[in-house]
Amino acid sequence: MAQRWAREHPTAVAMREKDLGVWQEITWESLWDQITTAAHGLLALGVGKGDRVSIHSEDRPEWIILDLATVAIRGITVGLYPTNPPAEVLHLLRDAGSILHLVEDQEQADKVVEVMGDLPDLRTIIHVEPRGFREWRDDDRFLHWDDFMLLGREHHTENPGLLDEIMAAAQPDDVMTLVYTSGTTGPPKGAMLTNQNFIACVESVILCDGRIKGNRKPGPDDLVLTYLPLCHVAERIFSTWTMVSCGTVLNFAESIDTVQQNLSEIQPTLFFAVPRIWEKLHAAIQIRGNDATWFKRQLFRLGSRMAQVIGRERVANDGLHTGKSRLLYLVGYPLIFRPLKERIGLRRARWAGSGAAAIAPEVITDFIGYGVPLYELYGMTENAAIATNNFHGRNKVGTVGEPYHGTELKLDEVTGEILTKNGGTFLGYWNQPEATEQSMTPDGFLRTGDVGDWVEGTHIKVVDRIKHIIITSGGKNISPSEIENTLKTSPYVKEAMVVGDGRRYLTALVGIEFDTTGDWATRKGIPYTTYRDLSEKAQVVELVSDVVKRANEKFSNAEGIKKFRLLPKELDHEDGELTATQKVKRNSMGEMFDDLVEEMYR
Image (cartoon, rainbow, N blue to C red):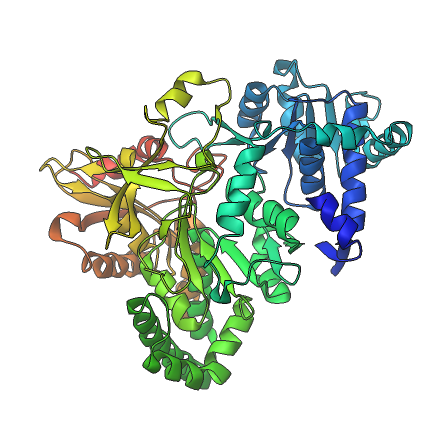
């Protein structure tokens, strides 16, 4: 597909990357030339059909170039999260049997060097950044990206038609990538996705009818901001796969910390984010209102009230405007909604999606009220993210939408587990036939591990992960994620984990949002030094107590949080409290903060 865009639109922009403060463009002709060169570089290094090529880097053009080059020679890409520590790098590379590994810089190289003695299959390490590799310059296993590309050009000159021959021999059931699961309850497993899974995803998700207002499919006029890790199936779909299938322009965020700034610069027309990003944007809107002048604060408060009314009106009308909401939006657009959307970077967004985890309906409702066309969707690595989607004009907030065309979806009669069957269903887990068998029903449906309910017979509501359902000592079944997401709608709460399995009542471990809570403390004249110091302030405990009380009003007495404790530190992937996708590891949290939990039940 990338080759077709290069032939038909050679001078069109495929990617942009910021270098020294200036956005640099990469055309389709240049991109395909680099993919071709990298593919020949791999062939020159002995990489062939079925061999695994791993990538450990932040999002950047070289990530996608090597990914597509690997697929072009019928190899298998294995993506790692930039935050993976050495122990996880060892597990992933050893499990996959990677023979060639790309690292971005010395930091990522150090991680693999630390465990290289246990990686007998690994032959070559390519590094993109040149700094910090002096000590390995005489080591034949290390190769700079420029030297790798030079090797590829030489191989291409000597074998001009070889790549076309290899691509022509590709089969639908060729495995193109191993996408490792988040590993919330055990070591990550490598889900095998094939060329056929990719095609099914393009047809069912990217090019599906009715997803976007006016049914205008993604195309070369659309701008996408690439910032989530490309090893995650969602980012791969909405960045790489959408780009090669539709010609959309990818814009690489400078880092995860500059997403809001880069959003404002790029003003993407298509934007996908996980709930954590939407929550941060939501909190940023509220904080900006607090920091404004008196007049702007009054304007912001008026706009917030208008947005709430607009959001409720539209949510009750399947996402469409009513006469009342349209009038309010037109009145508020020039002074309130247009500047607000400009600041957060979504003024031109014609489609925005939330997925990969549950999101509080209140957050979606507010964004709809601001005029951002936000839709919740659902899928997982094992079905190439093909499951359900809220379509334009049929957007039921609080659900993850309707099954895509061609997707069979049903609920297990006993457990309520969501089961799916479609062309995106994965080939299985790499080297784990037993786990593969357990993931499927006898009649070929994928077990998602999520409990669901039908809403009005058309839309699916995800209740929670089966393994996360809490059963209290009184026998009450409770979904913790809904309570946790309600708590996280507060700009002062970053993480929340409800506890109560086998207990008399529910409690919660709460992590404050350091920036917004710190801003609040500064405005209140409360001095603090560190995260721990701030979280121990009596005023902050009282602030979060008010958040908990407001959240409890939305639930029954049995579902209310009776006690809570503030975490003394920010949760971290490297400390084992979060997965690489920033999901809370409940078992690890229970062990690490056992003293806080037990304190709440004394």
